[in-house]
Length: 425
Ligand SMILES: Cc1cc2nc3c(=O)[nH]c(=O)nc-3n(C[C@H](O)[C@H](O)[C@H](O)COP(=O)(O)OP(=O)(O)OC[C@H]3O[C@@H](n4cnc5c(N)ncnc54)[C@H](O)[C@@H]3O)c2cc1C
Image (tube, protein in one colour):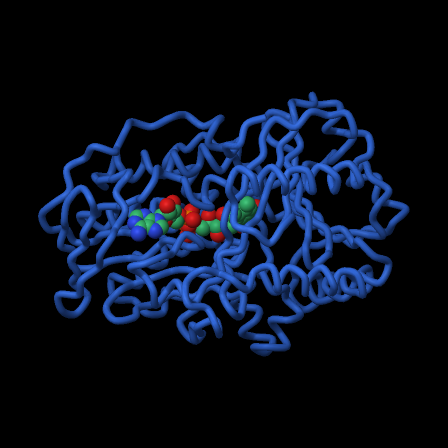
């Protein structure tokens, strides 16, 4: 079994960018080479800016190379909770941003010719408990009624048309959500940005950020120092010192994934015939899909621990149990890949973007960032160019997580709380 992300292992390797020269003055410096940073770099370069991207590890090393490859349409908190918090109209505007975000990926893939298996196969939410069916019904009524979004409520007896599992009590599907090979997409975005003149620096952790005045900063890396008129923080769950103000506003929550051996088309047709991006309704949910080469990818917040090889292996065993409970026909199936990554959970599980002390940032995707990080890269290019309305999240206050001073000591407690909620509800 490999403890590297399947997506990065099966994507083409770009040139080595770990020995690039760092120095001088640039229009924009971006910290983090994930989807936020790379998309922002590409869109800023399209506007004629000189852009340098600094990545502490390698391109796509963070969540962007480690996720489920699901570009889905929903908010992290769900639409009904968003209505309760923000009112119908604002919640609708926030929700539609996710639809625009999936469109943004589709457009970028076409414009830049990125070969990444993008396909609008839709999503499928599966009721884990009989009581959860009612929530799906209410969501369906709002979606297909007041919002005019095409969704389908699926009864337990019809579920076999969507999934080869008897475990669920009903489902809700849409056709707008998409799947993609996120390793090929992230790497393809990096190469597209490079073609437009963006300089990408790998193995270049930003160790110090010094404000020179306004939005101008000096960034110190182990390989050199650069001066930038604007800086974008795009470090998601990997945010650490020197970005302390941002760090204490994000809980880095581990999410883990296993990928099976290739199963062949026929087996996959029996598991998920419509190739939907699927998840269940538990608080500690599982998500799963078929990869372009006919494997099952199965993920979840298996343990509230930070990823490392030992923790990933333990999480892999928990996920394997959950996978075979969902699909008993896979009991003897080999697992080829197992890895973990960090999700950047904000206090309110909403995206936060803007400027603080002269530093621009876009963070807090809370597990729904494949589409949103790509979209926010584009929007931040507009925002940094002087269009405040380009930032759809500008009215949301970015609150510090109480008691969060650096290392996330609170994660096991949060995990125990959500496990308890899944037992009782
Ligand atoms: C296991 C897992 C599954 C997920 N599944 C899905 C999914 O199916 N659908 C979905 O929509 N979302 C999913 N997500 C969330 C999604 O992947 C992220 O929201 C998104 O990729 C964030 O992109 P980003 O560019 O903001 O951050 P990242 O991709 O995390 O990039 C941040 C980068 O910043 C770098 N960095 C940090 N500090 C420094 C520094 N000081 N100097 C230089 N570089 C630095 C890091 O090395 C990292 O590469 C998942 C996340 C995980 C972890």
